[in-house]
Length: 110
Image (cartoon, rainbow, N blue to C red):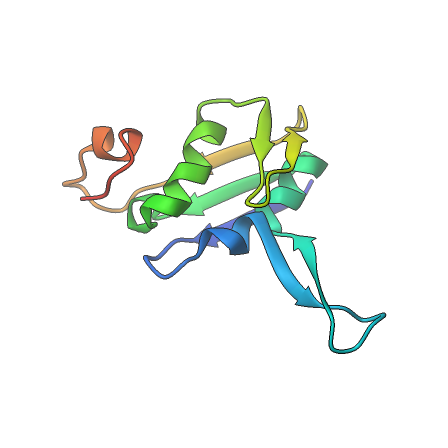
């Protein structure tokens, strides 16, 4: 079984999790979209552990929240609908003892 550990910070950008714009190996000088780490994990049924989800930006939290709530599909940043593999699991931790978890559920940070 494969498990990805990701540590969040306010500098983590949502496109790194969803899709990435990478240079094409076939056509030097051209770029293409490639699934990001979480998108690949969703498709393959891998487990993801997100450390310090309370430190993630609201954009990143907006991606993770539906998955934490058990969404059956995932919409990438460029509008592609992806079915969540039945084996996919997402676990999130927080490190702040003063965190009000409702702020994450409502899309904010403390």
